[in-house]
Image (cartoon, rainbow, N blue to C red; front, side):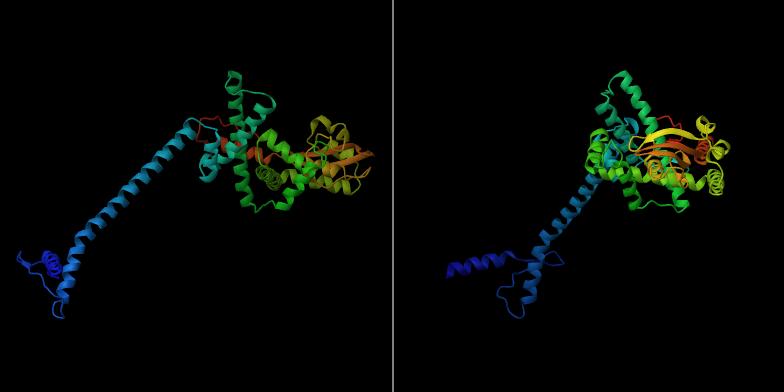
Amino acid sequence: MKRIKKKFSNVTGKVRTKLPGGGETPPPGRITNDTVAQHREQILSAGRRFKYPLQHSKQRIIIISTLITVAAVLLFSTFCWWQLYKRQSTGMFMYRVTTIVPIPVAKIEGANVRYSDYLNTLRSSMHYLSSQEGVSFKTEDGKRQLQDLKQRAMSQEMQYALVRKLAKENKLTVSNAEVEAQVQRIVNQQAYAGSLKLYKDVIKKEYDQSYAQWKETLKIQLLRNKVYAAIDTAARDKANKAYAELNAGADFAAVAKASSDDTARREAGGEIGVLEKGKADLPPELQDALFSLKAGQFSPIVSSKQGLFILRAIEVDGSKVRAAAIFFKYQAFGQKLDELQKDHKVSARINVPVQLTVQ
């Protein structure tokens, strides 16, 4: 019992409180109502010696962690800048980065061209040439072809960026239903025999694109057609005039000779020749319109990539149609591209020549 009391007195004897004058208060001994406040202050004073160094360590850790994070971000940003803008990397890793971060590769009339869109188009073209035609981009000829692909991809994506801008200004949109209808037109062609799976397999094999990516491409193409038609009032007015004449009973060949922009077939009354369903070298929307006609009928005005068409089925023999067309070429979009280049409102952030021609 004496030994225990001695140990307790040694412990309490070590706990002393600093006085303002530099001395120490003697240990309070037993805890009583009069000494409880003094005991509490001694315990808190002992704890502060451990608390404040720990707070200092936490602040230091936060500062160091922040500096490391900032340095890592700067280093990664510099690496990406070098890979994209200097080396012009086309690898999958850098493509993934551009899909996450909206990095611009060019600008046209104030509208940014997304690096991810440019790389998507370029990588798809590269995959097609390498997988289907055996092109190696390490050879001198392959390097020249790569430069041509870069220029084409840049031109296309600049035009699509302008299409999006003009579509927004003209309040034009493309619905998912319109995209699905276009897919169905393509799938119904003989090459795919109505098989959506075959269509998806071809997209993946030849272009290394997912079906979702490909549908986005179709969507911008359909939007482009709408924009072309909306801003080209001259072509639309000519088409409306010709269509009104046909509805009034005018001869199709005579209207074609007087109005069509297809100089190669104009003098022949717009006659194209005999086309077979599923094999005709026509865009899906034109095939859809043509092969729904009966002999002697003509279609409404159909909007396509190159311009507006009025189609006529001269004769129908099963899946074959002897056809004619009146063509009204889009010119407004091409003229706008020329003006933008002339006014220096087109710029690329990588070393790729910019030569905008309607594609």
